[in-house]
Image (cartoon, rainbow, N blue to C red; front, side):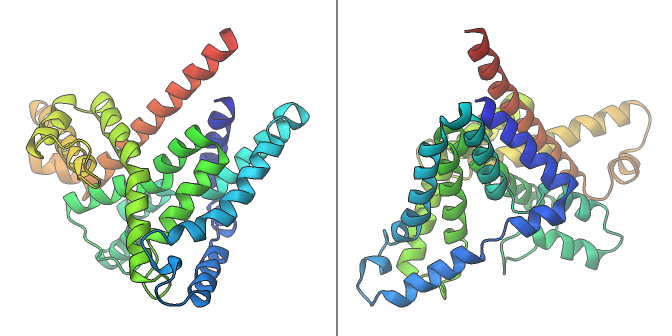
Length: 302
């Protein structure tokens, strides 16, 4: 647990303070080359070109990291293992700093610059939208894939889990010219399985740090989804929570005599949904880190 807490703090600090260094280290071209090599080796109707073919792309790098994790776990009283944990988590985090990407959108001086900055919140070749609901979903989707998915699986399985999640995301986001269609579909299904527990925990955390009633209302409106993959609960809960946050803030300013329009534009800025979305994401991360810290303290006391 202590390794998890230290590694997350280091990953956040370096990514925020030294984004160019982080971007230079978090390169995944080797994995793209690996996928292309696999794609060139196997003929039609082979295992690689089926729904479970993505396991071939995952097993080799994961085996190497898993063996190193086991070998370094107890060496030098865990110091080398801790260093390995930090390196792997830092590599798997991001790859871009979510805070800086959101700030670039909020601080953009014109529409063209804002659109270009917002493109970093969408997958390659994705359609960029600047309406409030789309921006909220983009922030939470990026938080899931840049932060919480990596953190959760690192917490559960250590460096092996962090790399498992990052490579699964990379495979699921690749175009079909790099992966066969059935392999790509299998990769997306596998990623949905990995993300299901993370998105449920994020939704629960959102209810705790945001508006509980808004999250429960979104859950009911969706028909109380439970075990369905990609059930959209996190996105719906995020939209409802941000709307509730803005409504409360507008109400506070209205009571003070400031007109609603003035409050929205002059006080909240042009994209209040985006600002509140990143604020809620940070609250969730702080809650998760606080829980990890409690486990660490409990371990020391015990």
